[in-house]
Structures are given as structure tokens and as C-alpha cells.
Image 1 (tube, rainbow, N blue to C red):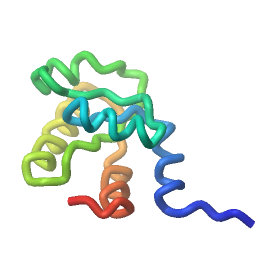
Image 2: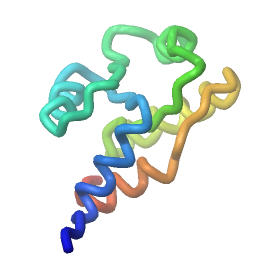
Image 3: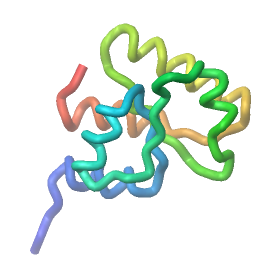
Length: 102
């Protein structure tokens, strides 16, 4: 019987979501993990970026896990709620745990 590791199961779950990252390098790193539905904020205000997101999608925010990245994620969650955009905070926390980042 084949059992997926935690990281493989997480990556499989992430396929059901669009992913938000800070920059182009983050986007490329996720592409190497076969995650292609990725939006990067780079070069835009957070407000403009959020307003431009397709509303019918569900999102996971994978900004950096340092102090600034956590603050940015919090702002994104707040704006997404305000704009009635669906997101999953739990997968962000699971990603951090599984890949031991932050």
C-alpha cells in the first residue's frame, strides 16, 4: 500500500486553491513544486492586487513567514474578507509546519 507523505498530501490539497505569494521568485519556487495557479503581489499595492483577484476562486496566502510576511498575510486576509473572497488560513499554517519554515 502506498502512503503519501505529509508534504505530498499538502501539495495535493493546494491544487484546489489559487496561491498568493509576495514575489516572482516565490512564484517560481512553487512552480517547481508543480503548483501553477499562483498570483504574485510584486509591484502593486495590496489593495489593487486584492481588487484584481478573480472572486470565484479560493485562495491560500503563502507570503513569507517572517515578521513582515506575517503582517502582510494578516492585511491580505482582512482585505479578502472585506471583498468577500474565499481563503483558507489553515493551509498556510500547515504549509509552515510541514515544510518547517518561519
